[in-house]
Image (cartoon, rainbow, N blue to C red):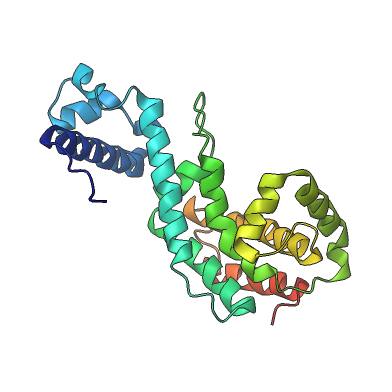
Amino acid sequence: MAAQTRSPRERYREQTRAEIKAIAVRQLAEGGVGSVALLRIAKDIGMSGPALYRYFAGRDELLSELVVDAYQEAADAIHAVDTSAGGRTALHALAAAFREWAVAQPHLYLLIQGTPVPGFTAPAETLLLARAVIGPFLAVFAQGRPLRTLDPLIDEFGRWLGEEPEVAAWVGQWTGLDADDPAAAVALTGAITAWPQIHGTVSLETAGQFTGMGHRPATLLAVQIDILADAFQLA
């Protein structure tokens, strides 16, 4: 079936919305979430404040779209990684790709992973987008042989898989494993354990907290990933 042709009005609306978001991202980069102001955007784009509300109902709707776009960018960066080598090589590649995206776009990273915006509720689809970012890590850890010290956490995640069909479906999507397969709990444990490890280093780097310290954040993250790979005995 041929794609439906958009009218000139629809194309103009889409272009204007994209321009509004581009200005909002620039404001975000210049001064954080607090600097995103619809009236300033309207002035920059050459329209009245009331006219801008024809494109976005308010600041929260604009921020919601920026959050969705940021998660999609992060997912694209992760999904572009070649994980065919598997094991710790794939794990290093995934972690490095996420860090590189975050460091290149710190304003977008902090929008989705930084301090919550007072009064702002992220869109419901955020959970699905976050899972899309983490998904490739599941496939890597599914091949793990975790040390016994991880048993308490694996047990808890195994119960979670049995209690939450959506979580089981997510793990199955990326690993091909049924929820009752022990490897599914291993995959989930590894991915969720890796996430705070990666964010801990990346968030401190993007916030400038490592400035003046005698190490490279990339080296710190690589060592953390090796420790995690050792714990799951990834080849």
